Length: 326
Image 1 (cartoon, rainbow, N blue to C red):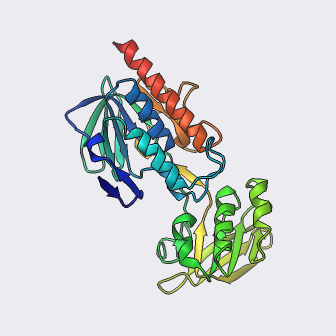
Image 2 (cartoon, one colour):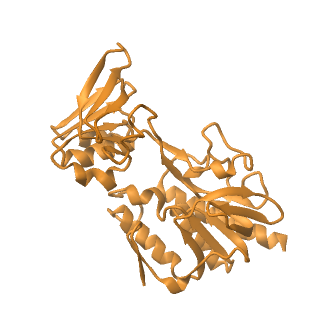
């Protein structure tokens, strides 16, 4: 039994085989979030040889404190749900590789996937379920102070800011959730939103309003993060008047949306203007034998339960494709 520190999960080694560049897999799944792990359960139950490669087991679920809209659980911690997903996959023998990203996808009669370490894997079909990652602000000081007061995961880093002053950038569900979590422990929270209104769910807006230590700045955006070795101040600008003000802060949490992890597939499969992979209702791309599922695709409403359903569809479609090829 091995403990995976990054995911906080126990792994039964005997059910996980190393990926083998010499093996031609029936299905290669890229991504270990809800879509990828659900796809694995379905392909393995179909008796298909399956390999799964992921940079982060659990995907965005590992950054979610509480989940209240996944059927069967009135409330469950994100890492706990990842644990249950992984236990389901552990029932089967699967070639598994974590902490390894995909560098390139090459289509063909046999699809080839090149990993960052140079290994090349081959498969009859590929399911891209690589999810999304946090957007950056791309302002002065962000890169220099990343990990020194600049954070992208309130679930991971909020405990370090107990009794401190923090800023949250973003008025969607992610920003509201982060502000709520931080308001419970921080002295003061300032939420900065570039639009003229908060765009998250009303239930989160109402919940945030119950905290007396939260200030909301609408139609503002950060211009620079300042500090000597650690975040000390954030320069924000009023988008209507152009007026600038410097806000004292011990930390800034960036919650301004997500970008698809689809770089390795550019030029291979069709994408929309947001670099999401286009799929039809069967999770097929326009490239035969390459399928996609979850948040990396054009399917609307990025939710765990939807990603799971899409992962199942992609797996079943891949199984039908292999059967028809035979």
